[in-house]
Length: 450
Image (cartoon, rainbow, N blue to C red; front, side):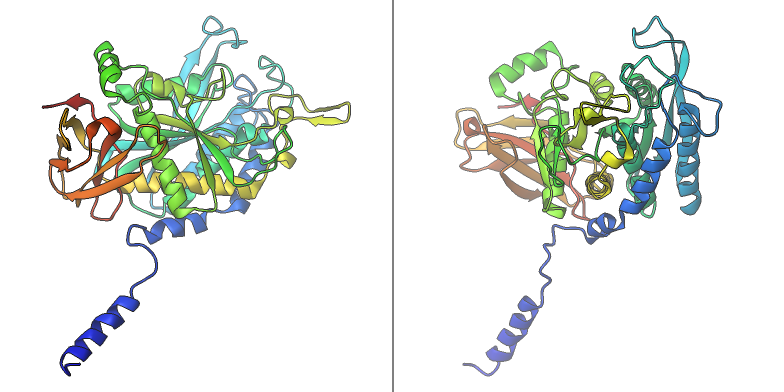
């Protein structure tokens, strides 16, 4: 062996074997965020919220210890304390609307529906928002009954506590886009809180990346007898209800029945979770919500915003929408004893890393178009994102595959041809990649070119 060649070979060998085992595609800050989420903190907040007796939307608003008024004032004070600890990084306020008995048969009296909102402004894209929500209100067996105890420990003190804990953790970081942490009210009476905030966002020109609606994230013991502390569901609708007749017509010829903006957000959450929390088992549910039921992401979907529901995999209906009682040896009621705080911690961490990843990512490319009809290659082009980014990544998958299977980083360009990839056999999408490695949500083509 040449004497000058051996040291050089040895030098490169040493460099090679000393490279870190962790993939360069991961961000160590996300692992840190996972570790910072506290089950003890979540337990404290769930117990506090359940301790208000009832949080029915139409319950007491004057008392300091019981009812919806005391609950929302406490939540607001907690957000304000978090903001104080991060040098006023949160803008905390009430967002409200007045509802009357004429609006729904579930409204027993006219009242204010009040949301508690905390906004952490982004440094680079302050008008882009990613939202995490939980519900403040609870209910007894009769949703019109606003005096009976309804602690709502899992439904939905768990989602509200998770949202507050995400704010505590993520307020220690700065993000390029804005993050909104919100407690929504009036969910049990007809999704009034979500309707109010979605309308507020529209009127104030919020560019919403998506909303992660957390509704029941603390139960691991299903009424079916299954105990599972790792599986959770991500519900997402296939396409927006606001799409035009022309968009529906195009889909018939070009596909995209399961590739709407909410479905892409769900895929993003699934991928991030599998990357950073491989012990978890995210289930993509191809449905707006549970069969025939609704949640607070729907009002955002109704206005054309991306939104998903994140929740436990196995519900226990004995602990949901039930007066506290025992019948035939079966205990009913949504009490603290039915909540698994470690599981709530895990799902809170799922939310936190996805909020962070999306808020650190650049905006998604616009006007993505595809071409390659009767050709042996697929062509894509898009409108480039403003700002200094690393480039773009093209994704594709077989038409029956639930997740993106293949990808290629193509650099800072606005068009690319995938040679040898036949357009007829796959679905395609494009994401923007920041220099920090974080990606936008994948965008499915909305146009076709020759």
